Amino acid sequence: MSGVIAPDDLVLHTDAAANGGSCVARHDGRVVFVRYALPGETVRARIVEQRASYWTAEVTEVLEPAPGRIDPICPIAGPGRAGCCDLAFVEPAVARRIKGAVVANQLARLGGYRWREEDEATAEPLGAGEAAGWRTRVRLATSADGRAGFHRYHSAELVHRLDCAQLPHGMLSGIADAHWPPGAAVHVAVDDDGVRHIVTAGRRGGRKTAVVEGGYEAVQRVSGRTWRIPVTAFWQAHREAPDRYSQLVAEWAGLAAGMTAWDLYGGAGVFAAALAGAVGDSGRVISVDTSRGASRAARTALADLSCVTVVNDSVRRALRTFGRGADVAVLDPPRTGAGREVIEQLSAANVPRVVHIGCEAASFARDIGLYRSQGYAVEALRVFDSFPLTHHVECVAVLTRAAQR
Image (cartoon, rainbow, N blue to C red):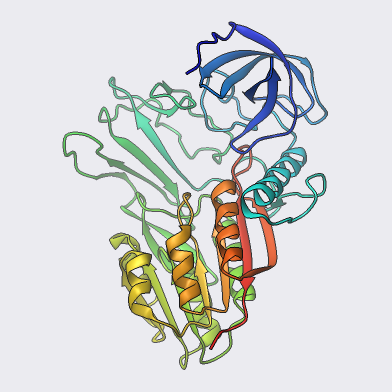
């Protein structure tokens, strides 16, 4: 941290949106990242973090609002409150344009790729594009006195009011009034049968997982196929996401009967099912994930598909054994991205077509740059507003390279 002490509050004029939900402002030449602001606003802000090269601030008063600012849709989010919905104060269509501009900026800066002009880029809505009530799974923390809550932004403190706008009405009914094991995580899911499941999972002291309501597994359906997914495991949060992504992956993979596909970071095998439908019994799909629970769910759900092999291993280790032979690879890595080693392995395996999915704009942009350094070209790219009321997005790209002998 530098020796400069930030004032208690500042009057700032905000410029463009930055990745992570803030807008960029400057004070005496120093960059200040301002949360809960829109581009082009004049605000009074409180400094909440100081680093050597920048400060972070939160809006305390809007002096000159920008078009698109509305009364917050989420009643519990905002400065000093829950960190759940950091764009709840933005009109949803405006928020989608901001998200698109941020992705375009990250792609240009970190990936060396111009997707669209920032004033033309936009994120696409999922389904009908409702800003509220879209989430099907949520994880709550518990305090020392056994109350469930959401974390404040970047804080261990909890907000015990639970009416987050992302959640459908009734999803958390009764949870605020219940006593929970202190330090446990409370997982809540409403599945595709409309059944609510509540499972607690210990974080300290070796506490075991316990089913409080419903079952340990939630029923999820995609394209007519059924999965049973542990409530504590990963599943797409937005109710429209699994079907939409699965359809797009099947379309962009460009597969035909008898071909081979690698489904990397494949989770429970939703994309593997879509790919299997294209390659048929004469083809081959290898789905790889490091999670044992996800691999078990995939094997069960896809047991009737003879062309699918499920591998429980890290993607890096699995790729070392695969050699060449894939016509397409589909990757849905964690927020940190696939990274240099995996992308170099795909290049060395001479995979001519890649469908890459990313849920963090900077990581996605860096991965796009790594593909391009290996000779891949971006054939198509789309950005989805898969997490309304937040700054998060989902990006999908298809990259191609001529096969090398």
